[in-house]
Length: 67
Image 1: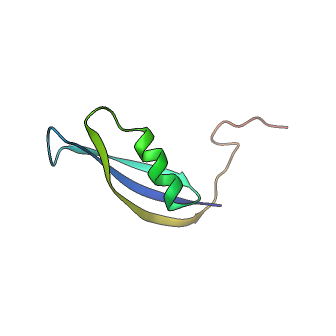
Image 2 (image 1 turned 90 degrees about the horizontal axis):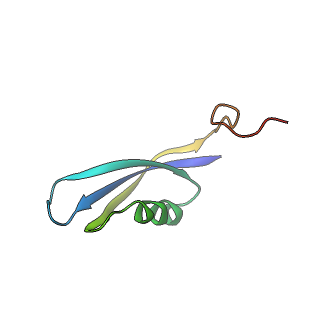
């Protein structure tokens, strides 16, 4: 099971102008790291909030190999 986090990435050159990400991972620290990895130049993660706990992932539906 994983949790879903809602992250906001804001552009330093245009305050108030940013984008949202939904990140499915196990911890807040991992969500923050994934959000930071998605930042472009002059962007920063300004918030990460837990949206949903104990999310079940259907691996067949997201394209993993079937055995």
